[in-house]
Length: 107
Image 1 (tube, rainbow, N blue to C red):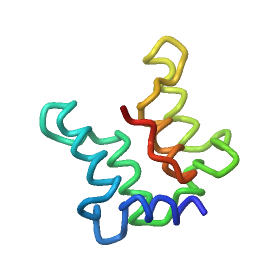
Image 2: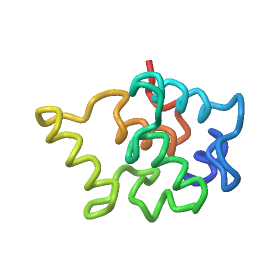
Image 3: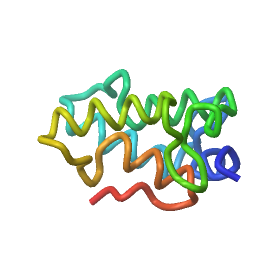
Image 4: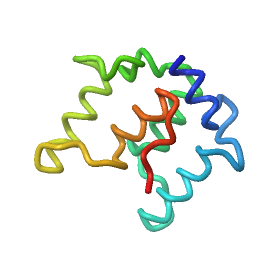
C-alpha cells in the first residue's frame, strides 16, 4: 500500500507528475530553501522511493517507522536537530504521512 500511495501522490519512476501533490511539495520545498530541493529532504526522499518502489524497505510502513531502518535513522537525526521532537512538516513526518496515503502535513 505504501508504494501505491507514494505513486498516487505523484512520485513515479518517470519523475514528479505535474499538478500533483508531489509537484506542490517540490515547489514549497524549493521556495523554502531558496530555489532548490535539498538532498535528503521530503521531495528527494519520496522521489527516490517512488522511482524505486522502496517505501516499505526504507522503513516507512503502514504501521509506522521500522526500528533500525533508514526511516528510523532519518527520524533520529531530525529529532536531534530539533531538540528531541520531529517537527510537523519535516522530512520524517511528511514522508510517513504520504506513504500512508495522507497529504504530507504541509502548511
